[in-house]
Amino acid sequence: MPVNIPNNLPAVDALKKENVFVMERSLASHQDIRPMRIAIVNIMPMKILAETQLLRQLSNTPLQIEVDLVHMIEHQSKNTSPEHLESFYVTFDQIKEQKYDGLIITGAPVEMLQFEQVDYWHGMTKIMEWSKSHVTSTLHICWGAQAGLYYHYGVNKQVLDEKMFGVFWHQTNDKKCLLTRGFDDRFLAPHSRHTGVSREDIMNNQQLQLIADSAEAGPYIIISQNNKQIFVTGHSEYDALTLKTEYERDVNKGLQINLPVNYFPYNDITQEPEVLWRSHASLLFSNWLNYYVYQQTPFKWS
View 1: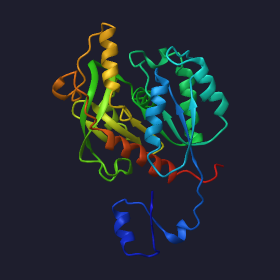
View 2: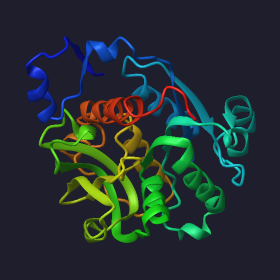
View 3: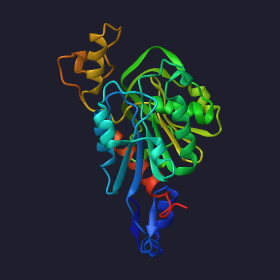
């Protein structure tokens, strides 16, 4: 939230140079406030778990938020009941005439398919195109980030030699970026994916900024020059046991899977994982809501 300070306070100039958002009282007194409208396109297989994780992060600010959950009508969910979708979700056709302050597009376990092979790709492209004119800022997560980079900027994904799986160290490249305000110089974040994007492809695209990356996990936070599109290649919203559940699932399927990196103490699966990314996740979502949604969205959409 902005700091509300007396008009003409000398600290204003210094704070603005540090990219700290301040609002003089003459402006604050005329602010109109309404709930922020956020749409979540949830394409995770375990939809109820993903809902819980994302809503937990969105609730960690003083802002009042109204959330619409969206599912892809082209895809039949195998892990979520039709009754749940009917009760709590809407389709894109039901909301396409509306305007939203923020949009979240989740990950999905389809990264080994070419984008055009995904059964709901056509519907996803309609949503991403719609977001340009109907959404203030869109947050793309994991496969959603790869899909957004491909659709908006032509940056294709690359198949990795082995699954990027675990909790990895990252560094903040742009310490004045509002999205990473409060981040440590180095921080941890979970990843769980078989594909990634090239650092060179991001750096060579003048419309994109690489805000944070990892020597092991590659580009992590990427922002478009107009701040409307934000791409996060990992899963900062994950709970303590999510990676454990995914590991056990793959083992039970007989898949070749390594232990998640930096996750189980002493790589001992009998010990409870340590959560070392929670503060970063909280900052990531609260900064997005505050600086890229709340501070940018109009009070009345025209």
